[in-house]
Length: 541
Image (cartoon, rainbow, N blue to C red; front, side, top):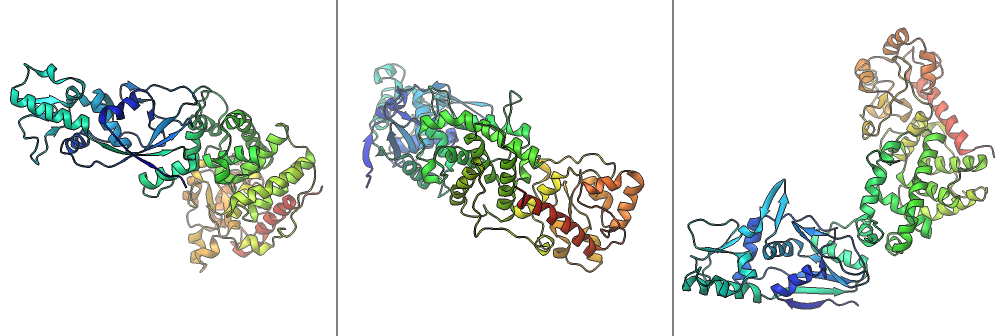
């Protein structure tokens, strides 16, 4: 069992370690947020000999992404492979003390904060209970800057202060420089254990994300690799190249990207194994993984016509498809592979594949993708999916349900057009967050069906959902009967019949629209949806 080491350090020893680069603040720490008043109170506590808490340091040879400057002070780097200590607990305190010691100027909220202003009121008695340290310089009161106190000798003050004040200055200087700072050193702990320590003592049980840990672990200054920056550029690089925002897939989470990397490197996406990934290999495969992610997204957009990431039934679906391209030398799949990948995609989406145990299921599915790479049919024994009409009609619409998202993706495949003018419907991630978002519309309005005595549950079938261009369609439809509002659109849109086919409604008469027959509409459109699903689940090979 690893054991921490208890150590006491003096002021100078503590901050020499920062000055020389041996003590660093990892970037998964919070930004420096303490005010000057908090810093002044901390100095006052030290002067009075009060305990100020323990600093916890993690000594390691691992190079983590870390703070490179504090205010206007740049911190030095050490040679690669040298041991450094990272602050796991006490960042705000140690940064405050360092700022005072160096007399730093730190900018917060566009305002400069000068730590040379923190001073000691020499009119007070050092042994009284009142606070003697002020966050601002004092006028008309004999005082001394804490910065000067820590960086000068007593002889520097002779002739500038009275004998009584010189005694006080000597007392304050001795108390600050000889104060025993309590520190605990955890030496050469594995990074996941060190991060667990950080989590428990800093965030009240809020666990550091796997991505935050991997950002720290994979940081490499020599190779100019910063995973946080790389991910930001992957999402949005400011029009300097291909990015996920431009592809409409900017909501892909960082955890999915990590799974794409781990899937390729180890065929295993478990957290504990991601933490063990070799840093050099991780950095080396990043360009290829990024390229394969774009290939997979292009496949989703072209083959399944899923224009935006919020329609993707699971973000995790990106992982096996990225794995395919990485192991297929980024070549597009052949005709047989396209059919096999399509079957897999709809099977995973409609079966609730990744609603639980994602890590273990992805490990199983890499084997399925290996089969597809070899032009072989994956094994679905015991996992077959056979849907009936009732499974579709009775499914309640929810934007968080993978089955519903799959059906909405299916609607998007047919490139839905506007009821009003046959123009293409614009599908946008920002419009797809919740069930009442702009792109969703109940073809038979809930309020209309309510008047007919149907419950909201009955009206909220996924079959009753259509993709519309914006909220104006809803506003113009309101609680009207389908025969009423569609009659208006028929007069405005000469191509309405073609428009409705893009919504999987073949004929307004036989689908019960002109008769406001909701049951007929559900059966007819539900069958249309089911037929389209079965074509994808059971392709001719």
